[in-house]
Image 1 (cartoon, helix red, strand yellow):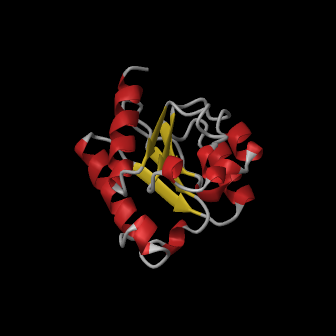
Image 2 (tube, one colour; image 1 turned 90 degrees about the vertical axis):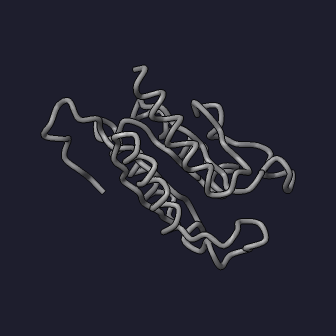
Length: 157
């Protein structure tokens, strides 16, 4: 997932859109909770939103925590901000939370469902205290909101 910095110094670095475990199964996994949209639909929405704002996107999904942490580390100097749906790692991964401070860029946490209205174990997030914003319960539109929020934060840096 490494990418060379832009050849154009005035061009903003892309936004990194990361999706964690099981999000590759969107569209078929619990559509009553997560809807019928797929991960490809999310990436397309994020790309379209970013393009409207003059930004680029790099998107990736993994079911492997170490891979996610490596991508977050690689974002340092390569991304202007991170949109992340950590999936189940939201509630379990101190390691991911620790990694999210490494790139020193704004982070927006996204959840398709309203995690606060679900099982009690989903009410706690290791990522939220690090995030500049948390968006939950908006379906895939939350990714659009996240990209727009990051664009605003990036423009004020």
